[in-house]
Image 1 (cartoon, one colour):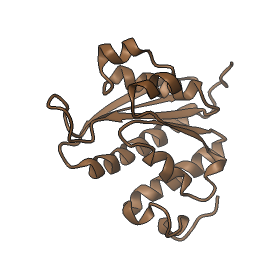
Image 2 (image 1 turned 60 degrees about the vertical axis):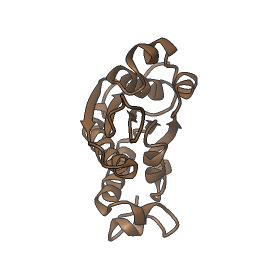
Image 3 (image 1 turned 120 degrees about the horizontal axis):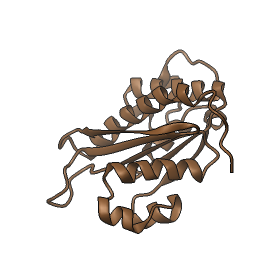
Image 4 (image 1 turned 90 degrees about the horizontal axis):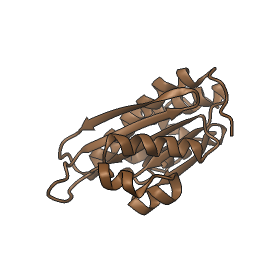
Length: 189
């Protein structure tokens, strides 16, 4: 991957770059470069971010060296059909929960050629009375390593801000988990 002078040069004017903070673009570039160098493919499973992370990654030149695929699974049916989650899991735990985030990440890993997958599910807001705006669950699954989870309570900061903050967390999780996946035994079918 080439190293542009600044992150804004990595994407052209027709992409999301004007709307995203420079440090998020830089983090995405660094992640793609590290994953490419390690020959580890990445996959995303996104609900509340609606494919924003996949879009960010694919806005960067050379993304195909590391990005395998993205699943936009906004509905319950999409989570079940595309990632193999059970309806019972979602009914029992709720779509925005740790078990569902973990299952999404593991499903994305199983249904891709990636070595590392991230899942994002949350309430960007506003929503139903029982929904907590800004509640987002993240899970990261990798070949040969235990799936990791974290939860953030961003508060009622608005849909756009929740999605942007979710990018920060997801990129950080992927960057921190990548070294654990490097050197792990390859997945067997």
